Amino acid sequence: MAFGVKIAKGKAYKGAALKRRHIRVRKRISGTEERPRLVVTRSNRGIVAQVIDDLAGHTLASASTLDASIRGGEGDKSAKAKQVGQLVAERAKAKGVEAVVFDRGGNQYAGRIAALADAAREAGLKF
Image 1 (spheres, one colour):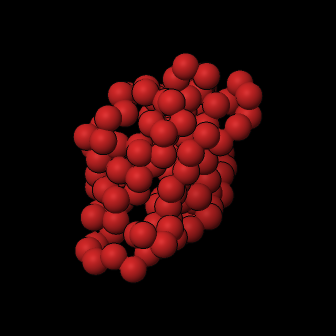
Image 2 (cartoon, rainbow, N blue to C red; image 1 turned 30 degrees about the horizontal axis):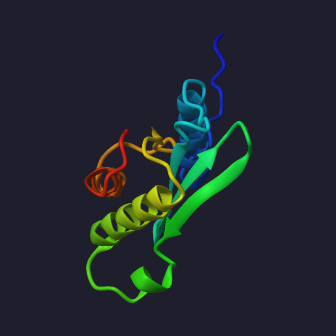
């Protein structure tokens, strides 16, 4: 007789699945001094992007929808993600970063994640 395994439902299952996907991505991706990691964290309300040097353990640049220049802006969440991508690229280039490794954080590369990445590329960051 076979026994079923109880699997979490709803929000708990989605959070666990996201964490599993992020771990799977992070197995292959690591930021160095020459090519730091551009990490994207997405929530229902906002989006955060950070440029991290994993070897030194330092955040070199960051931007989010909570920044004063983006917070009061017009547009939907994808438009704000584009603004975050441009802002993090400008801040990273000011710190001397030319190329990054993109870490989608377990999220699907579509919608706001893709909009942020495209805006960062247009602003001059190389992936």
